[in-house]
Length: 338
Image 1 (cartoon, rainbow, N blue to C red):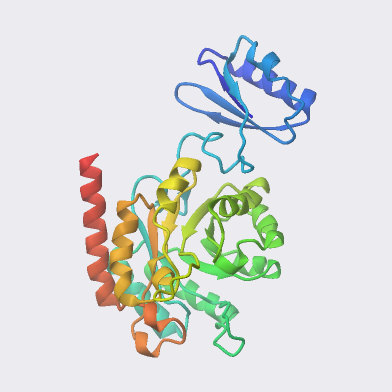
Image 2 (cartoon, rainbow, N blue to C red):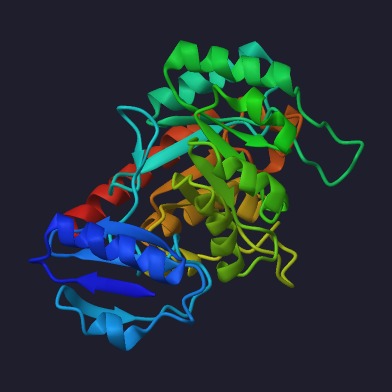
């Protein structure tokens, strides 16, 4: 349920009204203070809430029920865009374009540092790299694990780039204490125990869309994290499984404006995993920016033919430099139009 209060309502009146709602109806109240008005979102079982009684209160502008099952991730509860701040330089969702770039998997100190330096020069603001790798085959390279995390931290020290890497299980959360953004992969999007534990942290979470997940299922997974108290969620569209086999997945460009309409959370796009083909990364990335994405996560490798994982979808540092220039130019042109 959404309650919009009149602009003239005092802080004391808001607090008294909020306390009464919690006491009378046993609900949680999510409060958003806008420029023109204050919005209260009632979370919980609201079937017994007397909507006519609330609407009759002097301080209430309007009240309506929300049908969607996700509440905290719902734009109706939070009209303005959420901005997830990583450090003093990186704020995702504030209208700027951020690119997370780096290899699918960390292979060595020389490799990750070399790539980190290259993508940093080309404009990347975050370094991605897999330390723990969920693979379809049990015989494929599974990542360097804790050693990979240490190597990412070395690359961060060398370049200043915040690091983004994937977590696999709840028992690893303590190991990710010094990771800047914790990535939840597509296969773990509905690992609800993991999502609940990440909700207890304050770490920014990059939540990838599941292989066959609907948009509502994706938002409900974000809701699990936010219900635990962590509002620092970034959604990542990485393609979904369809009947088409030419590409690794099918990038759902329409998901970007849909998410922007339904939710206040920032959304980034992964053109590498969506296509599985390096030559498709540039056009898909351009399309994502044109559709309103807040950022991109792109796989970059200094020697794709010999990459330990996903070389076919990785671009070289030189290719990334060219792509990044076009992406930032497109973003600037779109901002100038508006």
